[in-house]
Image (tube, rainbow, N blue to C red):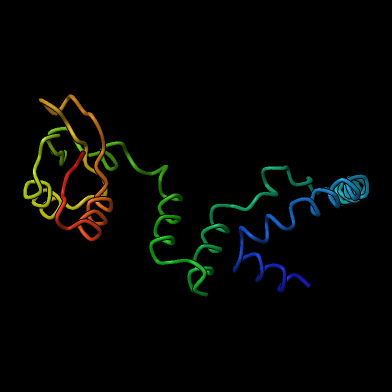
Length: 165
């Protein structure tokens, strides 16, 4: 009984959530008293056999379960490889230090505000990143952020009019 809804939700998560939001809220309110009684009954039976009832935190999915869901979703083609890497990195984030995440200021790839096409393209090709701070004067005077994808779109759409303004 759970395979069809699960498959539907995995293949169309946003649309499924939007369509079911009000319905699920309504049924949640209607069945709240019954759910509370059944949970209390289950907790009572567990105590009767001398087992502690699970806390709210224990009822949530563990990191291992979430990692399994990400892996299964990727294996079934529901996640792009880049999405899988991104989600897996979320699980490892607490193990990382600031020095592993941030680029030291003296190694930062930045672009001067008045840079021409050649200088921008050289920076983008020699130091590939998705974003570049744009500075005016010295590197401590950041005036904006240049997105590499915006430069690529600009070159494709307006090849004769390269301007960072």
